Length: 194
Image 1 (cartoon, helix red, strand yellow):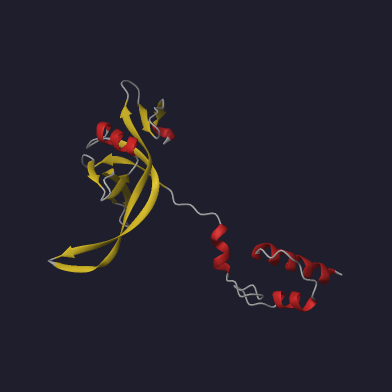
Image 2: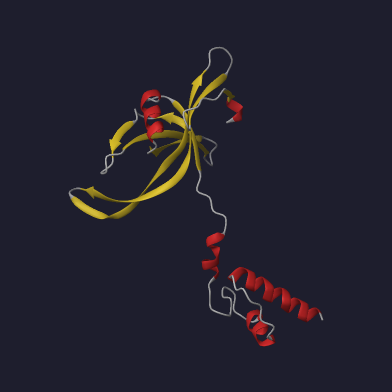
């Protein structure tokens, strides 16, 4: 009885993951499913990786740092404006001898959203502190070194979804937060909240 119940569970879970609409009561089919090698269904050879399409995925980047230089406005081949800005972050690493090494990392951030492009160009400049939320994007680029073309390499950038300009408030150690997601503004944000 227990073995037939287990077979029914295995058969039902296999059917649910493969999207088959009919159940077979054949014991030989159940044995084929149970004895299938890992990574295969044993029925039609569908690999696990094909079923992972519906698995949860996330591509999210959050940066808080200083703007290295004034944002640069560019235009695509089709005539759309976009803006590129470089956000600098610092990492502090402790060496074996106890000394601290500071690593400065530049991050290329790009916005294609028309309202956001205008906001960045009008409000953000070199030295501004910003909080950027976006997604990591890779682009194939052919670089030139010493007049010799090198093979294609992937260059990473962050596609800006939202950007928040952080300014020091007068008085206490608080910052006000001007955000540009859809043109709105937010109230004061404490440093410890970020």
